[in-house]
Length: 280
Image 1 (cartoon, rainbow, N blue to C red):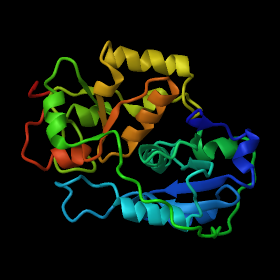
Image 2 (cartoon, one colour; image 1 turned 45 degrees about the vertical axis):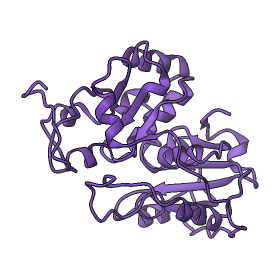
Image 3 (cartoon, helix red, strand yellow; image 1 turned 90 degrees about the horizontal axis):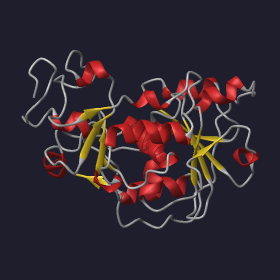
Image 4 (cartoon, rainbow, N blue to C red; image 1 turned 180 degrees about the vertical axis):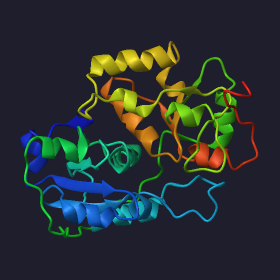
C-alpha cells in the first residue's frame, strides 16, 4: 500500500475509513473547528502522539507515549488492527500527520495512509469543510503493541554519526542546522557528523510530495550507498523527521530509523555541538 493517498481517491471517504485530523499548537482545536474533513477525528500532537516530558533532556520535547496509552487512544478513536486509516494535518503532512503515520507503521498497523498535501489539498479541490466536532465511537481494546520499532537512542546516534557506513540526517532548515538560529531549543547547531536535508525539499510548490522517482534521487544523493537500515533521521523533536521517513517510504527506501529525541534531547546533554562557525 502506498503511504500516500490523494483527496480525489474515493477510499478517503469510504464509510469504513477512519479519518484523523492531527493539529499542533495552542490553538489546535480552534483551527480544527474552523474547518476539517467531514467525519475527521480531532487529534493533537502534544496530547495524543507524545508524552509531556518532565525533562526534554530525556527523550526530547515530544517523546513517544507509552504503548499502553497509544493503544488506548486507538481504541478511543474506534480503530481496530485491520482498520483503514487516513491521516492529515494542516502543515502538508509535515507535523502530526506524518508522525501518526509513522507511529502506526512502527507498531505494525500497515493499513494507514497520509493525505498528500494535507488539508490544503482538500481546499484546493474546492471541497466543503465541516465545522462540527466529530465524535468517534470507541471500539474494543486495541492490542497493546510490543514496541515502537525502527527507533534509535542517543547512544546509537553517537556511534552512527562517526561511522563511515552509516548516515545521520538532520531535516531541520539550514539556518538551524548551521547554528545561526534556534527558535525552539536552547542551543543552535547540529550533531557533529550529521548531514542536512531540509524536509520541505521533498515537496512541490503546491505542498504535495514530489514523485517517487524524484524523491528517490533526492534521498540517494544524501545517503549514497549506505543501506537504508543504517540511515537515521532526526529533526528538532522527532516530528518533521517522520515527514522525511514517509517520503523515503514513498520512494521505495524502507528501513531508515527515527531518533525520537532529536536535537531537543542532544542539545540538552552537554554533548559536542557543530556549527558552521566552529566547523566540527
